[in-house]
Amino acid sequence: MSKLGCSSRLVVILGIVLLALFLTSFVMGPLGSRLFNIDVPKELQINKLHVVLPSEPIFHVGEFAVTNTLISSCITIILLFVLFFFATRKMKMIPGRLQSFAEVVVDGIHNAIEGVAGPKNVRTFFPIVTTIFLYVVTNALLALIPLWGTWGPVEHITEGGHTYTIIVPFLRAANTDINLTLSIALVSFLFIEYLGFSRIGPLKYMDSFFQFSSLGKAFVDLFKGNWKSFLSGFAFGFINIYVGLLEVLSHFIRIVSFTFRLFGNMTAGEILLGVMTFLVAFIAPVPFYGLETLVGFLQAMIFAGLTLVFGVMAVTSHHEEGAEHN
Image 1 (cartoon, rainbow, N blue to C red):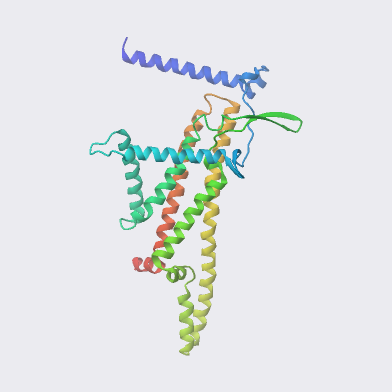
Image 2: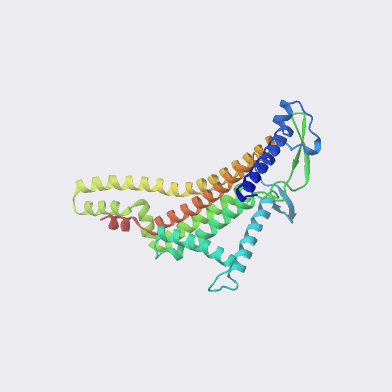
């Protein structure tokens, strides 16, 4: 039998198996069972999706609640530590698979940062940007493992006269905890502002917001008796201060946008997977797993990329930008 015939037969068999799984999951699901009036055995029923936004506590250490998202976050940290520890423990000129994988990841992120920040600033941004990217993307990928969100004690709740069975998972996607996304946003915000104050200097960095120099120049014109220049400079000075206040507000709004962008996208993805699994299990959710993998990478790139871009803007004063354009 030719190889072409074997491969085509395998494709047909695989297609039949996938179709059978799809039809079985559809008939056993709530849509098919209602459509064909089938009583699905309780053992084969998939529990109705119950959305709980706050993370659930698994156990307590004193008064401190250890939640399922915190456990997932710790697993991510341990996994990344173990991966790069063994990848760099015995580095060789001819790398093995694990070292090659680590080098590809590190070189790719390093080159991306260098393309935005330049060779001079790449060492400044590399640690924080790489940490944010790897942490967020690993959280997202671990959440796609079937063990996440499906393993835990069973509880029964009653709503509207109906009793539902829900699972309180031991492991839950860390990115769906708003406290975690807020903590990453705060780290990014503090890092950016620290760079601005330390690299440019407090006075020069604040002047990039409010531009007090134009107001000071107006008072110099006043002492010189140039009333026309004083009035125009004084008016524009207060306009610059107002614009500066809006700029300061925009910096704090970054915390909100960073937090809810990651939290919202990851939570929506988890709900989407839960709904598709409830309606048509086995085959239908598979394309959405691929979509959520892509979304996880995109969210990690956006979070790390915006941290990088805002950081580069912070270490570049407005005066230096104007000089470059001139």
